[in-house]
Image 1 (cartoon, one colour):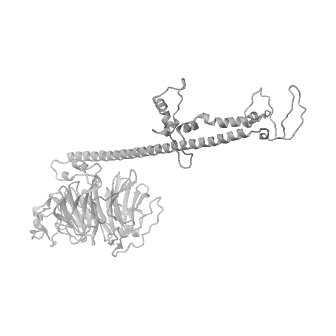
Image 2 (spheres, one colour):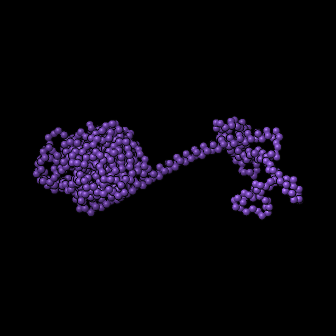
Length: 628
């Protein structure tokens, strides 16, 4: 039994006090055994106190000895008017029948007065009140025992109060845990609401897409390509029911085959088609994410492929050779013999055979255009029925980033330019020169207070650009040479991140930058933006979230190693930050977590996710598939 609780239980069993409960009867029945039990006391307090002793220390009669001693020491003195003095000090009126007079410090005690006669007012010196009371030895001994017992009572009460404080503390801790759980549930509800908003927006966009298809000419091949870009998809992706059974935050599939760090990757949809490229391989590999098997390779680039984007069954790649390849992934054959002699035909033959529109619904340009039909070594021939559809030429150095949507493509290269292409004609419709933008900077964004300057070490000349990356978590590093680290556009708005650490916003109608976001102190390697924010990652070991309305920095996330890839939505930011694990930042709860289980053995550098499905590539040459 809890003796501390029993010590506080009232034992008033008299009639009229209160209703007798079974608890009271239980205590009465156990009285004989309980009277000999000790009340638990903390160290340093009176020990071996019986339950009855503890009970007596908590009842009102425990102060009976103190009251008796005060009454014994009471002095028979004339009325001093203390009550009236106290009421007067508080501004209160005394009773009118109270005729006591307030004595001052100069007043003295009158003695020897006779009833009915006026005292003669004889003065005598003030006498100590306690001097008139004389106690015998027995009384003093009794008071000594009473005081010691009162002190023991205080110890017992203190122990009981301490126990109650501990009990209340435990209750507060339990309530705090409940509060924390409720707050987490509230955050989950907020995340669910955001997910529903994205789903609703995705459904509305699909409805608009379906209506646009209905309005299109029946059987038109162009209508077959009116689809929402996976980069803009808001609603949850279509996942098989078994996906929910996978443990969250675990890499459930590993793709082996590359022999060098992964340089680029992208996929069409969860469990769809994946394209990966590595640093020492000029032939990107095509994978079936349903089975994890390699379907074939995209052969034709001369040098490393540095950027990849996949939409449906169409793939664009940019490489060290300065070219951009357009591929039809439906033509990739896993049984293709890479060493066999290809059947080569001339461009004139192809023009005669494929005059008009190709299989993807894209019009083939004239032979004299800036687009090559295929990538075989002879510049005037193609491999018939190969996966390569076109080759875009124009950049003089490596194509380091690209982004396309509908029939518009923007590429960025180490020649410090960005080019806008029309995929229906294969023509470069605009060239945007970053060196010109550096020499003609627009005014700093309002409210930033940042000067227009480049970080030391960024080359602003027409020469080659190269800076060493900060070491990754395993101590490895390399020379970073991608002057244009990332591009993305939406409508006529284009955002670029470059080697001078600046994030520029361009008008694609004029090709002019109209705002520069300054804050990064090293090359910008990755970016993404939506209606409200631009999120950028840099070799300066930080991710910055910019407010598009003000141009200021909304939030900064700092890490220990350089940021090489990122992607975000309304609920989270996933980033590769130079470590083996992938960093996940919950934008709702502002909590950080890391994906590690069955992950990379060396730092992860590339990633791409869609809803709860994520693919990452690392310096260990491995490609990992994750369930978020």
